[in-house]
Image 1: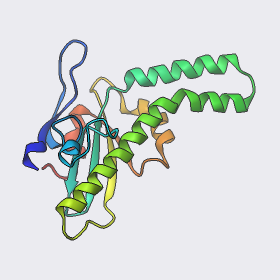
Image 2: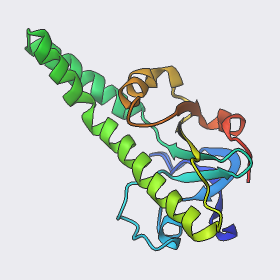
Image 3: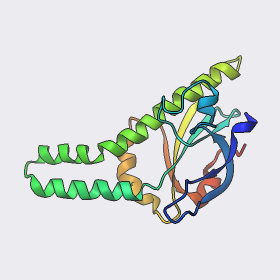
Length: 180
């Protein structure tokens, strides 16, 4: 497991800079991540970037580092356009669902793929299986993004994802159950 322990960082932005959360977790995604180490091909599942396992309270934190600002803006623009073109309330509801569907699908697929990988890890690693772990989805926005902007997305994900916490890169350290 030590080889998967990595510093939690966002991917490079357009300017080439990288935001670091100044904490560590197990890398789940990419060729050198835990998912591939457990026998899954890199593209077999959508998955979050990192995972933190806390055995004391059976908590699993799935950490997705994402600059959702552009995606949120795209959803809002698409929704505004669709609402201006239609009149009936039922059409507006469909337009809202359609506008948010790609982002909601991406996040819920990352959730379920990551849970599958962690469950395999538990089966392979622990003789006494971890019964009913508590999964938490941590959506980590870049520091320039207000986590409150994600409120609509969080509401859309309720029922698909067990527990969701949104924070910024600089505050992630305070949200992790126990640093590994």
